[in-house]
Image (tube, rainbow over all chains, first blue to last red; front, side, top):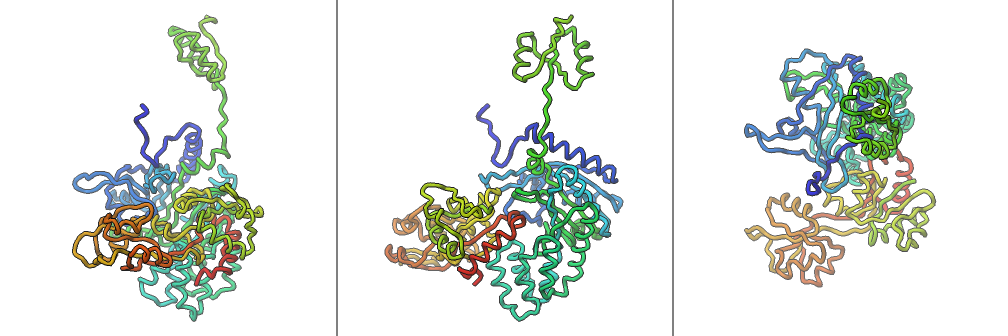
Length: 381
Length: 208
């Protein structure tokens, strides 16, 4: 058997982690049903073209052979499959969906990073109101209180803020793109070089401070007061502060802000949010508003908000916080004709389990290995 | 405490004076002997690593900050989250070969390099398809012994090239040592990280 190995970047999950994963996902599913969300399950495989414009920095898709001469991929994301479903199945909107399942993103070989993720996500499609964002954030707040001990750091931004701010520089699309990329990827030496020619712009000090405009609401507010803010971002900025303040009211949860963060994908159009836990190396939650995503699927765009929660990564981080309390079972050894009697005993107890050993000696050895007690029905009989 | 993955060797030697000038007591680093992890003033923990491994430590969350050459960042395609150009370890990527090399010759050339991705991107940018041979060290040898038509490599002063009768045919771009951050560490330890960035910027003029 030793000749069969797993490909790099993949891993088996064991009971300890799965029990946490299940605990969180069962709770989420129950809460989502109670809130009127419908579950949707899309296939693991899709045509490559669905994800052609999907942004995956430092990652790649698992690409498979062709079917009907069109290339297949293992889904790296679940929002686009949901969009594909909505645009092809005449679903009546507005509607709230959730999904849960695996997705695969190929990391750099031998990097120690895991390519597979078990993700739960929600999509609120057809809702233009900010109440849709608030429903997502309220859910996260509840998740934070229930499982994360209030340790979730929630961070808000706006997908359009960068485009709007750069309008005041009156530069062409190519230069806008270059500055945005340097800002989003925090390539600061390059970013400062690119904004240097705009020293005389009245908002220059804002652009200079921009990469550091993240942190608590108060911290960002204090920094902004000292700067000449481009008038083009006022609306988006107000939206971010409005949602951040609403977050606090919702769950007593303080959100942080990042005014220099990009939207997770190019189709995001409004408030974006991310969540991470202390000492984690990456985000566990990502989402936001994408009112134009369905444009590439159908004639009419639909306002929408969605988010994904990486359950496998989250449960890995929760292992220490939610240690599994394992009660030692007591085994019941029985002869085959005593099956009903043994079953009656086991059914009425949380701590009894059938011993599947053929002989009493084997049953005793099994109990010793598990550190459990043993009831011998043959003796009693 | 900030965990800093510092490229050991030449980069380490060039960065320690900058750290000292910016007020970090580096005596522990200077007297580290064979230790690979050195704590400084309960504030920083330096992890001495090979250059190509620095970003692996960062990506996996084992370190908050990395100090590494931009040649490695570009070769690995991990150019994001660079907070500062430390302006040391300055050199440049060049295309070099013997005097008989004709860059315009119409045939598929063989290029020897330690940096296959950078080489690939450069030749793609000029619309040329080449065969790349990965070489781990003494790249200058490749055109001299006929293993490759030319090389893509780093040079600081050009002395080694001259001593081996090699000429520079193209400049591919400047290289220097960069300070890079893990994006989640940046969120969680913003003030400690920017305190170090600002202190270093004052002594190295990182944004010039």
